[in-house]
Length: 252
Image 1 (cartoon, rainbow, N blue to C red):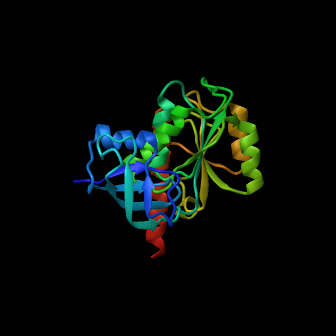
Image 2 (cartoon, helix red, strand yellow):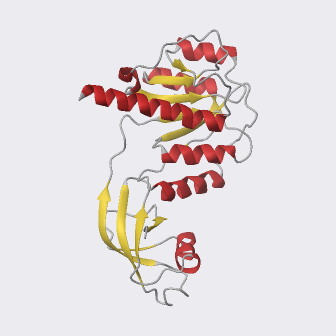
Image 3 (cartoon, rainbow, N blue to C red):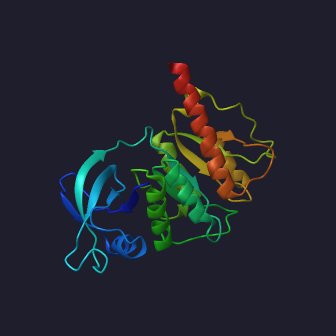
């Protein structure tokens, strides 16, 4: 039976006994109906994964409001290198939550919503739903690292920061854009990429695409169809990971 997973951001390597946050406690005791002696996995979203055993709470394991766990062993997991930032124009509705789940599962370190000219959604800040989605994806995927989701910012500001940082980047280019001819991404380039740009469903505006090209970002087109944002993100990420894997194989 697969171990149940719980998100506890306060977990440290020094902990011997921990109390799950209220929401996680309720899920463990009232929804999953776990009992004392059941083993669980605890993740803090910062690289720590602990095997723990549920203990009897003062009010009884099922009636109590807090789930108390004894830590049996704990492991520290390093981040994947290079760390990857996803700069994406958020789509409307819950589609952006789907993107956050995908980013968590694929090991993205930073999600930066960007406000583009053709973007339909223009969120003003980080919503509680976004954070809950990240935590749920963390547990589902058992990724030791929770992505940092930043407040939405204007495309040009984020691009300028990337330029000053000298980062290697790729961006999702429209398959019909004749202004963006490109060669397949080399494995050598793929292992250096630290930022992926995905525009809105209408694509980047001509001046935005020109700015990306001027900054040295490599255009990548996946197939001949125009993709939704929530489709383009995993497609580009899968393409990038495939190129990186090919590079590692060549290096052996």
